[in-house]
Length: 121
Image (cartoon, rainbow, N blue to C red; front, side):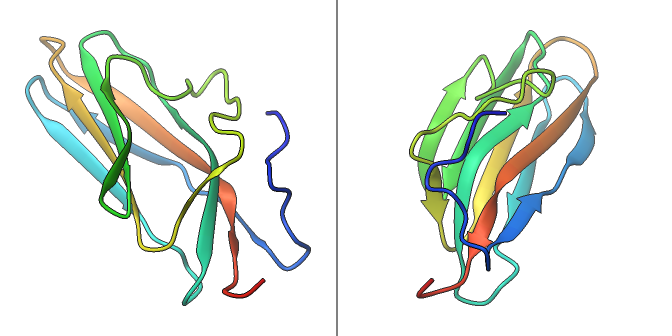
């Protein structure tokens, strides 16, 4: 994976929290991530998601759409490259929304990568 911009401070807390779920045809799945530290800002460099035909991918940060809906994910689990330079930021939540319209069941892996920076850091 390329370097994250801005680079993390020594006090930053790394974030890499994979999640896996199964969706039947016509189902929608949502994964929500929130900063662990109170008042922290989350610096998001990449969100890797399994790429399947017949799927749509959408990302929201603090309820604002930052990606999609789109037929391809920001980056694939097998590629894992930085998606945003500079990295995206959020303070409340990151929602990853996936819809399966493929005609059959699919397994999705979601992996956001970044770090948390304490308020004022």
